[in-house]
Image (tube, rainbow, N blue to C red; front, side, top):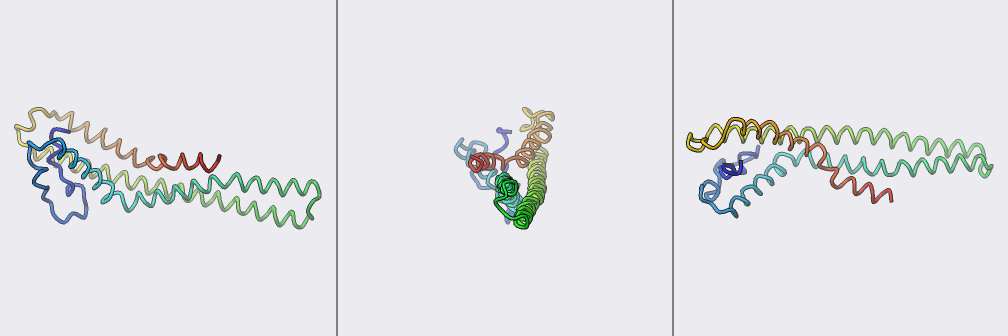
Amino acid sequence: WRDWSSDVCSSDLSRRATNTNCDDNNSSSSSSSNTKNTTEGALFRTLLLSIARETYVQAGIYQLVSTLLVSTMPLIVIRLLDVLEAADMNRIARADVVREGLRWSLLLSFAVLANGFAVHRYRHQAMKTGVAVRSAVINVVYRRALALSPRSKQGLTSGEINNLVAIDSQKLYEVAQDGHLIWSLPLSIVLVT
């Protein structure tokens, strides 16, 4: 993969690319490692910005909403229990207990339903992102493998190409599924403590 990745340009992955020509530095086989790093960085930016921007940012927003809701649900339960304890000690009137208890229980029900919706939308948007990234990578790998000259294919077996397509693209798909957990789990820990 590293040997022929310099032939891949960022326009290969972009659905909205205006030109299909790579930079002059990217197509030369004797380019320096700095140019290869720049090319790989451009590929990664293109994957994230062009393909995943629409769906993955929305998935992040839904994950944030879900994280905030899950963090507030215990607080709502505590308030509901406080109302019920106050009713046992006769500190508030019976009508106020029903009204306050109903308010907190409805708020808890709404939080649970909203969390379910947010988690569902997060998973859906993350899956759409994973499918888009995976199909773009498969497209680029096959297109470049088919365009290689016989001399370039000498060190490349069909098993390596299948490995790139099957396993490595699946890893990108799985990263898209759980990538937002990198920031949402520490946020959950901070909110709970």
